[in-house]
Length: 456
Image (cartoon, rainbow, N blue to C red; front, side, top):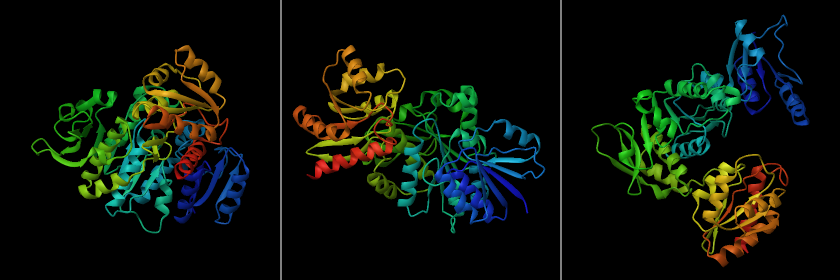
């Protein structure tokens, strides 16, 4: 019996181990860490004849070497043990590549990019499902890819959000449609140079039969047709800004498609169908519609999905409207850049709730956006007094230190009425660990308090 070793006891690693076991491999799974949760999983998997080694790092000096090593997405591709494994001729692949081997009979949509991946993936999956397809979102969102491969019935489409780490460890992954959302410097500690990071992402698109690009992204726009002559480009700025002679754009409030040089532009759906705010979400909308149309999905299914799409939780998520005031949860904005985008995306004047556990970073753009758009700032968490001081330093005095979310929500509603502000925005610019286990729990608390307030 062939032997496989899986590195990493996360959702992906466990799914990979189960898939290999189903396919007749002898499997063990190692993780350097140990915890109560891991010990519980160890017992569960032992019952399935999968050996879990905790506090363990793979050692290739043993005599009984595996024929296959499968790596979870978070494990760097160039750690010494993997370099050595490849030198020894041991096949080494990522969890995504393993899933592809059992799902390649089905068409894939693969979404990559620095930002915007999650919203675009969720939107594409929602549209395909509205059109009647079984099209689960997987990878960095929803299921692990190997969980989809384990399902008794294969899906109609696989919609994968795929990071640079996952592309690096997937040599044969070849999607029907590849989507590239944005490209800015990120993960450079791992990928060393911007060019290397670009080349990894580009590999996925080169392997895709059809390609969709965000033409409003400065870097992708610059490489343009010289790198990607056959791609479908998108632009929220209209047909004049379209790269090449085919693609999808917004004009007169409509998403318009132009499928080739000679075709007549066709209106598909009104852009206002999307409830999510912000220009970046219109970019995500265009890429999602482009993908759906390239898969021959009809406009009515697209419109239905987009009108009902609630957005991704904690990212400019519309919670409720109370007396004409929109309450918006942007708890995922855990740094200044993200919080600046949050403020830029909503109507003003805004009542802003900010604070938590502060992170290092440049706050100048964020402070300028507060001055331009926020009528009052309510401060919570351990960062409150430091934020108050920074606001004073730039001459902004309309802030109140309220301390907790429980106090912030009713106060924000009162202030919004008083100042006729159309929006209350939670966009903290901070981590959540001072008051919450993570940003999701913080966003959920905001949601519950807002709904309770609106309901009363």
